[in-house]
Length: 546
Image (cartoon, rainbow, N blue to C red; front, side, top):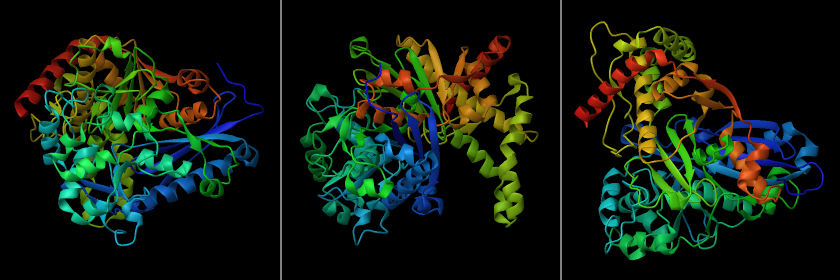
């Protein structure tokens, strides 16, 4: 049900991905996308602050600010002046966990003199895996604190997450340790910037990031005990005490757009700033997640999202397969998150591997031609191959997230011969990513979660019929692809729509703004037994390598 707002009104949603930010302007009357824009992060695009061989990926806060100003201005310019004047809400989503050390005012240290070029003073991107050993220490300390297991809803704590990144950084840099009053997630900092409050003690912190990555939960009335965190390093106790307690769901009205950002974007007074979430969670909202609906957000990595009432999950031990947090997707529900650390990145690895000669020998024209056409030709030839002869492969190129998280796990391909060609390797990698996904879905089903519909969002879902058909065949159930090419940004727009009062709650806003699905992939049951045999080989390889 729509709340009465006079005249025609609009909201702006911004989705901060790993490489760029996307913005959409949505008409609250019927959910129509009036305009959209994309802007790459300039420093990141130039390759700054990345050391893939060491698992280090940092992003400068100026990239986020500059890209947001540009992308929002482009989208609003395309929508027209009348639309710009009628924007009533704005909200964002971002990758996560992507935290940054900040000073007492909530300013990222990288924006302060003396820290400008220091990667440790920047945002630590979600896929930064430098803190693997620290994550192990956190698991040991937090899993049994006077009989309380702070990891009980998330399972094995990851190096990708909040406390692990802080612990490692503070051990390596005394300068950062001393200067950081607190650490703030990217999504919360941008939201605070827009609302004009980045004070770590009072600023908005979203339920999504706090619950899934910082282990906030009502069972222990907030974060894990500061004394427990302090046993790992005294600085963690200080960070916990400086976290504040303003943890609330996405869609919450955080405040009004501040004067600085009103001027930057040319927006009127009275624009509500909505609470935020991580991108996959926003994508689930933008795709139309409900009870008994699984949303697979398939991009460089893959994240699978569901919601369930807390009372239906009591007594279930599911952390081997997924993590859960209160209000992290839809308010009033437990948000259930599983996924794969690498999905599209696995295919990208093969692509970069194959074009390596053209990069090394400076043939730019050949490199560009290969980059543009390679995956398309690999797909065409892989589709024609017999599934029964597929090489067993593992999708753990960036570690294994679920089931049974293991950050030291690595990918593998078995059965290579002198006759193995790139299309057959590509086929094996597509099957590996699909089989990794099947293990997750099977685990959720075994734990009694009813999955009546599977929705896929993200670039691969939109662009690769081969991958999507393989996923449907492997899962042995239909897979529907969301009509929204920008499901995450649309989810952020839904947050803004609720925050500005256009809808009374998230589900009502979904009914008015979500787009449904654009295609359906039905499983090919004639190849059921062949896929089942290949899946058994995948599992056996995993056991052997593990």
